[in-house]
Image 1 (cartoon, one colour):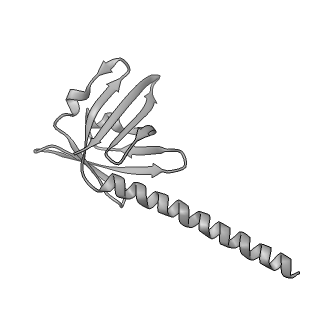
Image 2 (image 1 turned 90 degrees about the horizontal axis):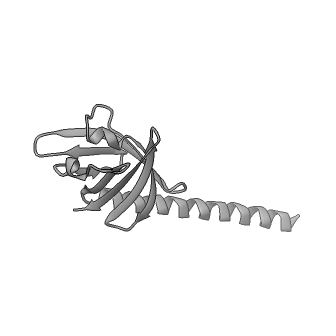
Image 3 (image 1 turned 120 degrees about the vertical axis):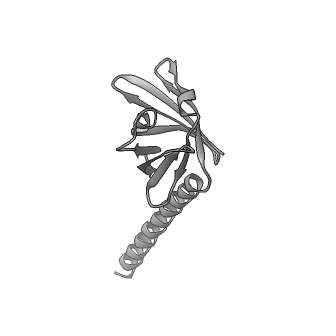
Length: 135
């Protein structure tokens, strides 16, 4: 009986450790995304390179799940959700016009460091490639 109690305690502790590790991973990602501003270095919509249409924009991600895309004259507000397990980010700018509305998608992260993110999504059969860099 004592053995069963100890096994139960160990399983609970391991579960708590796994949860703590998962929370720490999420916290690290939040820090990376929210410390500093980002710009779109490259955006390809299928074979079309539309990167220059994003050149006036800077993006700020916030810990509360909000994101702003702004120029010197405008600000488009949206939301973002990162998922550590699927290596994806969902972005939504509900009132934005183009080009910012083209970011409304679930983006699969294909490569990243502390100061850049490469991601892709497919919209209506067209593959979009996004490359963000930190300012």
